[in-house]
Amino acid sequence: MKILLLLSAILFVIFKNRITNDIKYSDLFVYAILFGVLFKVALRTEHADLTCPQGPYTKNKSVCKHGNGKLVQVAKYESKDDIKITLKKMNMLIKNKHTQVYWRRSFILAVVVSFLGNYILTGAFPDGRNLILLFLVVYLASSSLNSFYVHHNDKVFDEKIVQGLVKINKIHNSN
Image (cartoon, rainbow, N blue to C red; front, side):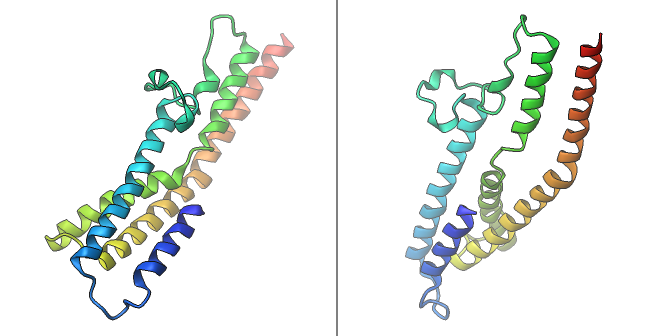
């Protein structure tokens, strides 16, 4: 939601008093920097979430590595874990899967596709209006598609997995 408000503010500033004027190369440079800075922040934050135990707020970056992200940190299985603790950790992993930041992935995809798509289609560097329009179309399409699949597909699978975990727990407790 915050990204949509930010994009709306950016679009207002960019297009205010310029609806009929052509955008100059100096403006294009500003757009490229703006997209570049936002893209870099989104990319760094996404990488930190995937690899660091406290996400971007991890102080000691030496612990950041593949498989050590904040969403999987809850499920560090240990040899002393009994079945109840193991099932609880698995359930927490399933719940954490749905707390991922999907808008950031859509933003990263939209920036890359906007620049590449426009270059492939026109053979030139995009002007500001085309860049922003293509960005918004790709962002909204990828964000909507991602939300649709998470809500209608992933959650159903996860509910079935949780039902199985509950059943295993009941069987284990009855023995």
